[in-house]
Length: 462
Image (cartoon, rainbow, N blue to C red; front, top):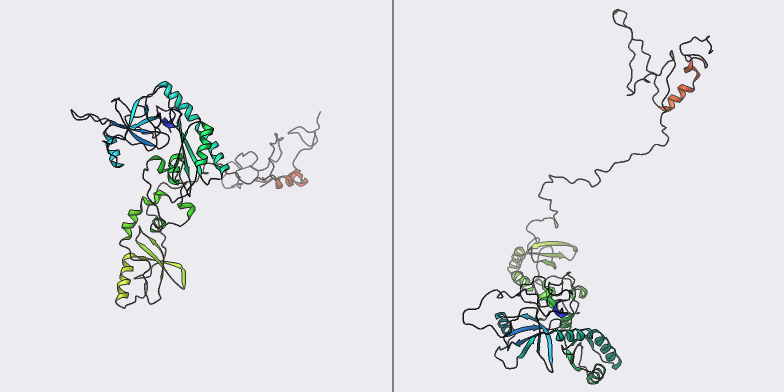
């Protein structure tokens, strides 16, 4: 993800040669300029007459580290500009993330006093030599982290160095690490200072802060909430999963940090409000059939499933109102015959309430269906002209193969011409055709070979 001011796609951590922001006035929709960005909805509003602009700006450094600096020189700043700020020692480089009156609200949210004297100063807008030196410092971070991890393993320290951040003037390096117990890293600091020739600062962070700095993609397919918008990390307990009827599977409930997912707290209040009207699941219901036990609860459908000891596989859905009625009857010493008022099927199959007007056509409806191939059936060869006087098989001149009927002559009708058409002796298939041709009885009227058509049997060919 990136914006027009960041051609590298890494956001404004790697700035271009020109120290100018993307000039979005806080309305960037891509989210690529910085992590934990805040939409400045006051950017296009003018201040009342006579009121001076707020002199504190919010500056972001590598990943999600943000600090507030006082603009002592009243420089006109916009979101995304690279600036040089006061550090201890020397100066640091960062990008402006928020300006104007919205910074006052952010400081109030973090319980900071704008009139405090310990707020550091913003020196100037970044120059070209400042940016070049900043780029050189960023290129040293990965190699420094790998070497520091090797040294920590060699010293046998139970710690994990997750990130390294160089100061903009290359005089200081901050090492972020996670550890489950107290670590004595005094010897490590001496070795790192001799190795890299910079001032070393060690900062311990939690597992959630580590995931926030490094970022990543969650199981939902989106960027991690802690690296995009979540600023406070509240404690998440396993009770949040129980209230939401979730499976207590650690692999599904844990995030990339190894802790319970922060999103388990998002809908917890809605579930707690819905469960206020539900009876306790450990309350015993007494019926004439026996005492059922609780199986599961469907909060949205307001149904509680029970089963009897002799039929543990049969889930009986009981509405919440019916459960309350049974509890009231048990308090009066009465026992209902069954859990339900009338016996209904445990699971009803709902039929679709729409009519299929268009119809579901097959995807192969336009494909040509090939029938079974008959290799034994041979194609009939066309026959040449037959000599005159030869008995032509019935239907030979009829290409459509229609059957010819022999009409008998009517002696009473003298004016009607007699029907001299031969009978229909056409064979029905090729096998019968071969029998007719090979049978000598069927060749009586055929003239002998060597005679002309129409000639008598005694006439010979000249």
